[in-house]
Length: 366
Image 1 (cartoon, rainbow, N blue to C red):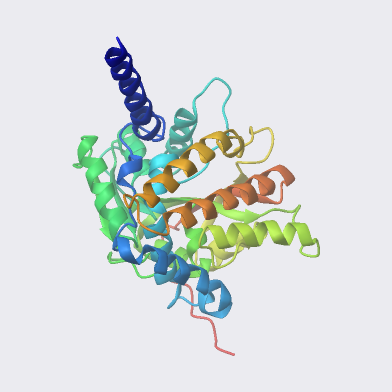
Image 2 (tube, rainbow, N blue to C red):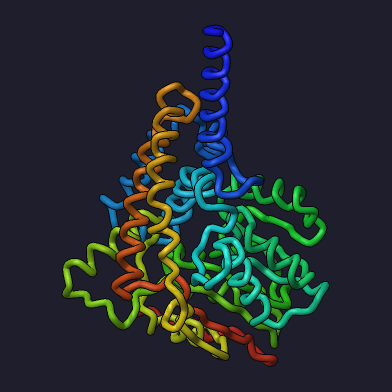
């Protein structure tokens, strides 16, 4: 009897550990498992060093304001966080307004489908995903529109993850992923029938540079939509708490610097775009986008325990605990930004490249 009791107890413990690590942890069944967390393209023994390197950028702020330094900065960030994002959040690395009666996954998908509906592409046309990550939005958009989607991301590890997910989803015939810098895209002029970016161009040191590249590769008459991270009209630069929140978001999300909402349309027009529509999709009556972060606090502590255990036994690389803690602190800054209304991750701008377009004249150097 004692042997049977011990066997049953051991079996229950084993099932509990498996459930805790492999079932409860992942945000999506097809996403990452806790035991598979890595540092992306960074070798396991160098994850902690690269985490320290990432934070060193903020001790040299002038370096993250230049196009030459930012690609390495952003690439390092996504090597560190991609697996944790997939495990704890899902395959779409962005926010969406909550929708009553809908799951977070459904709300996210509808938010993505709206982007491709706005640019009015037809099945079979070729569109560009600027900053595609591991391709969650790409797959939703390809499935919804039946357009051919080409995604670009600077992170090679994300390219491999996206291609794997595309194949698993049976969408690799519609979805292509390219490793490259969206400030210098490897595409010919007038290539795409439309383009979108979902919370991605915030990583550009100068928004004008990425908008100019998107303008270049779009066919005349086609449209581009972007969901931009911005400070809103409620942000006060003289308010220390506001500044603390915005700087916390910048440091925890690899941003050279958040832009004011008033700068977005001005920048798009500067490179030649016509503005079709502009709207903050996070503004009321939209339901809060940050509630998912608040509801995830219990999951964070559970996941943090998992990460600590896996790091301690050598399954997860050293430095994973530091990265996970950084993301939790960033989630708090994001929540505060949403609650106070000083920050929006989805300021939408819809633009059109004119039918007869020529590049704007270069600015005179002073």
